[in-house]
Amino acid sequence: MSWFSKTFSSSIGRKLLVAVTGLFLCSFLVVHLVGNLQLFKGDGGASFNIYSHFMATNPLIRTMEIVLVLGFGFHIYEALVLTRRNKSVRPVAYAYNRPQDNSNWSSRNMGLLGTVILVFLIIHLYNFFWRARFGEPNMIPIEGTDYDDLYSVVVQSFHLWWYVLIYVLGQIALGYHLYHGFSSAFHTLGLNHKKYTPAIQKFGAFFSIVVPAGFASMPLYFFIKDVVLS
Amino acid sequence: MAGNNPNSKPMNLTLRVWRQKNSQAAGTLETYQVKDISPEMSFLEMMDVLNEDLLRSGVDPIAFDHDCREGICGMCSLYINGRAHGPERGTTTCQLHMRKFSDGDTITIEPWRAGPFPILKDLCVDRSALDRIQQAGGYISVNTGGVPDANEIPIPKPIADKAFDAATCIQCGACVAACKNGSAMLFTSAKVSQLAMLPQGQVERKTRVENMVAQMDKEGFGACTNIGSCAAECPVGISLENIAMLNREYIGASFTSENV
Ligand code: HEM
Ligand code: SF4
Ligand code: FES
Image (cartoon, rainbow over all chains, first blue to last red; front, side, top):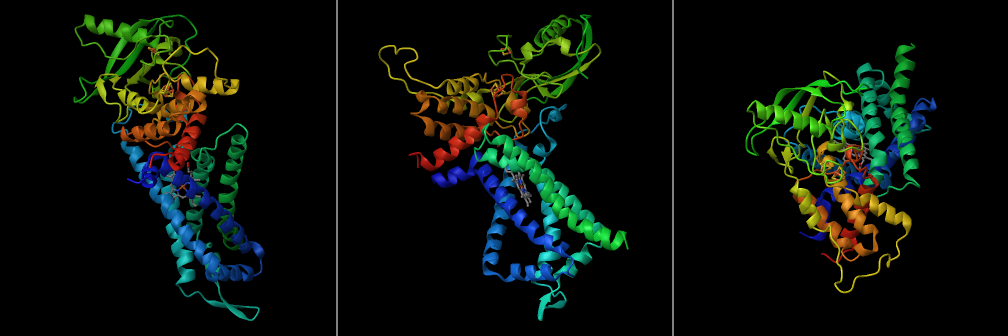
């Protein structure tokens, strides 16, 4: 085996891939969240539709999309390989076990949380990405040019209570995943020092609350504004 | 549940103990009663009392590991009421006192459970996988010849302290037992970082970490997901920082060592 494949098939090498891709996915979350905030503009969806059009056509964004798919692919594949291997290490379970006395729930359930996120992702991609790229949404003129009216697709989905519920649950899982994952990734990269680790942990906790709350606020906003209050 | 027993009254306890004849046999949890246990006894002394009772009634006594009984050798083990070395932090089972329990308690006692730690008999498991990790690289080269002066090699005090902290690992295996992933990363990291921090450890530094991690994987231990149960249950308080250092050492060595 070459030194390269030896490194990346070792336990630490695989962990390294999970951590690097995990942090890359965190940076994607920020871009995605900031872009989507345009749903709140109150301009009938004009800026959101222009932004969606840009994201779907700009060559740089399209290239990053491939990197993103690879990032998700590696993260999920390596994480599941590790999780399965780890499960097999203890063939006979303890009859009586109290892990809650020595560790956090989220840190022990990264595989479960990741799987919930994955299910959410499939639903989310099918509904928005697939329909935006390959479906035929209505066209809407904005300042003389016709755009796909993705804004309406999004807003109408957020009028369905069960769709809003899936979103909120998906974001709760993401929050717990990141509550452990964000700071854990730095540890995996070998970065643990009394000078900066407390700051990473604080920022990780902040990130794991603010980012999922930001995403969850969108379905909740449209559901409350258009369904509950009307 | 286990609490503090403030008075020195003797206790009666129900014990659920894992019994298994040998590595091949199937095991079960058996229930035993012990009477008049003094709160001043250590957990292992309580086990001795039970074994004497069993011997008197013609039952095979329970096999469990122990040696120094003063928290330094790393021989004792036992998963007590769902925790490695019992409910008290920073304590080996031999240093755990019965005053941590109350009269009438039921105590479940299981062996360390991990594929790489096969059960030999009852509560004894084979921990030689840890020895093999150590043998794969946990040593340094020394020149033979005259005895060198003490303190000849300057080592900054904070580094000496950190290396010493890592060196206090007694190789008990509680980290593996407590870890959801059955990972031996805390143990391996303590051994790797102890030597990586010291000037004496530089000769084998890169090869050491590569070989010890390869052996750790080969033995079938799990991969760390930074849960932290290991450090929380480690009787000598080996810090998680060592695992970050192990990752750093391993990644660095993978890309820079001469071993292709
Ligand atoms: C936007 C989506 C996601 C983000 C931002 C993300 C982020 C992260 C981060 C930062 C880590 C920590 C890495 C480390 O501890 O070194 C992590 C770990 C993990 N992720 Fe994700 N993740 C995402 C989606 C998923 C999905 C879809 C799955 C699985 C189906 C998954 C499964 C896991 C598992 C099992 C771990 C723990 C592995 C380990 O710590 O070694 N994640 N994730
Ligand atoms: S790191 Fe701690 S728990 Fe693990 S073997 Fe060493 S002393 Fe025991
Ligand atoms: S018997 Fe030596 S540490 Fe417990």
